[in-house]
Length: 422
Image (cartoon, rainbow, N blue to C red; front, side, top):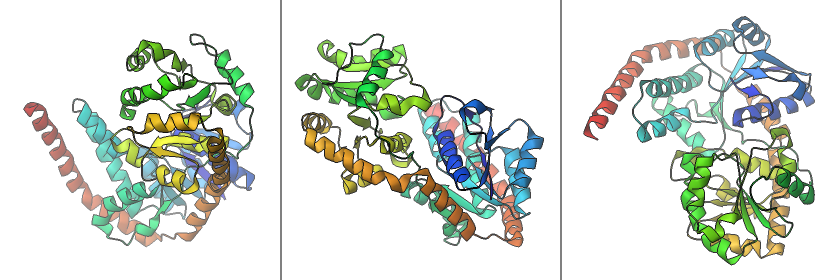
């Protein structure tokens, strides 16, 4: 089969979640004998297999020709040109899959309520909602990462289709690279090689890695403050961040007494392709979501990197990973009040830590990218959307446009009213 994975990303030395997913999926599809093209804003072909065909998204002609040649297209979002093209080729029997891993309208709504109202944000939110309805009415499949995203999508479309189209929405969890034993000693050496300010990290240190970005929704100030007791009772505990700005470093350190601030280590971003070699130095990964949509609906892509490393996780409670870790004994699920106590305990219990690592290794195979690819192929082959059904879907969506426009205008008026009251 010919697959076309469409995301307007940059495929270079660093990758975001969608790019990670498409590279991992593409490799597995190629290994299984399928042909794969990836759309991209930019790409470095020297970093990837020559079997992967990169298509520049600004080349509309080549994009459309690639769509015509493809059997299956997977869209992570997509603007008007991509959506209209997808509709056209779907009538030629092409299978169209909407990648719903990021519920964009939820994130945009969160931003809109924390900042000044923006016409652009509102327009993006309305367009993303429209795109989801389009996928239900016209496309063949919607893939989501977890049950919360599944329920969100079902609730979103249920008012229009009741339960008839629920079978179009399929959970396929994010994937991971196969587990490979890596050297902690070499990982420590690599971390120290990029460590310019902090004291040298030692083998006796208990290293806690924050493997992602430091975005506002994580509420890291409260998390760092909650760890002060563990830092005070075990000075070998070191919490390591990557790519934190100078301003945010000062803010994070201000949550600790000066005597404990050396236990927070700030390092630059590591080369994405080499990240596992660096992260092999860690004893556990800290993952924490704030009280918002990110905690409930995100896929937590770094947790899947932990599967590849056999690296246990300590995290807050949520509906996806919390249950998974507790069921398989592969990590610690705790609250902010218990975080310091639980981290201190695991830092002093090597046997318990080793058991968590072994359980993480045992959990990993069901999330390998090969399994992702198999599930996607089986799901695509299972669904069938005829031309007449697609046509009525397009017509139904066109009749909804005036109502969607009315709700968009209502949202703008409502935001203005809220602004004036505040």
